[in-house]
Length: 222
Length: 222
DNA sequence: GTCTATATCGGGATAGAC
DNA sequence: GTCTATCCCGATATAGAC
Image (cartoon, rainbow over the protein chains, first blue to last red):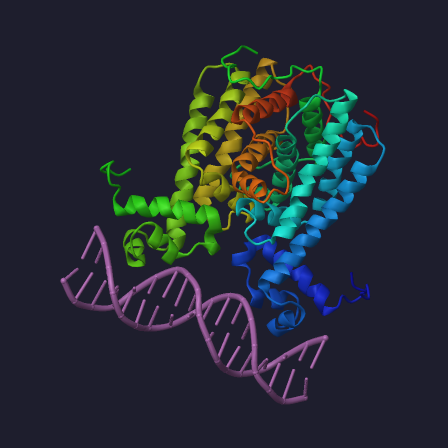
């Protein structure tokens, strides 16, 4: 919401970029305003000229991330594609945003781990709309008879979990490869998406094994 | 590795318990030694009598968590059950550990998000053995002809991602319910396990749609 | 808008008595 | 083993010149 000469980003933009990096790598408490300022080629005072506090800076970055995801996802929901295609697009929407903004997955993960301690109620409401959107898509498919009912939040975990883990694990995979604890073959981004879409649609397939989610199946033979 | 009168846990045990709670809720940097001491009904000095530093305390807790998971998982791998049952048991092993030690999932998540900054190389090696064990199970099934080849790490994300997200999201679900942003219907633990096992086995099913994981499929219809 | 100082304080770690 | 008191650094935030 702010005009910027695209060539040399202004100080505010540089701060936001550096802060996203810092928060993603270290978390809210681990982030250091001095280091952040240096990375933005500015001094601390400049940060506090643009932002009220560390917390305000963090909130703004995180809220903007969530908003970007929500924008894409809502567009998907409001399209007139069949539900199965919406699911597919839903997964790709989140993946695309994670690809474009590599600092988003780690920040998201940390917020989940911390019970959203660093975000205000309004932002919590925004976050909640992500699975809520998925729930609408599922409901549409159920009404169609294309899907069988499934717990939307659980479905959401099945999408977001692997996706975020994949994006976030890049540094670890690199580290493991460097230290040769066991070289990890590279993972194709398309393979990640395919597997997630497949397993999500499988969980929604009315024809499928169904897995009545009973408490009583174990020790069966393949 | 330490005898303890089971009735009144000794100070060291109380510290470990309080620390797990504190680290899980706030992360390494957010954790506060004063608050931790109070929770353990001790003073800070006592913590430093038992542990070299905050980092050492953190490391020990985390390593122990990983070891507990590894113990279960190795037992699964070394059993003579058919590969599909091993997969099932693998999922349940991690879920059981997450159930018993509720502080483990958030800490794990944070370590992933932070690129394992707070753990030593040896522990990183232990962590890596979790997907490595899964890889062995998969390889066994592939050799059998029961499974088709799949990227073990990707498979691992498909298991751990949803599972950890489920466990870790309990506080948020509660918060959402309290603030009535939209009441979340409860998720049955068994349903979580079933869905994860199903989708994992589906990804390994040689008969299935297969999704050749090529880089070249997009824009197709369902 | 951008900078150099600096105020202020929370929190990790230690000293040393008991 | 357990405590009280304290050191002291690092980190958020601000003052105030340019």
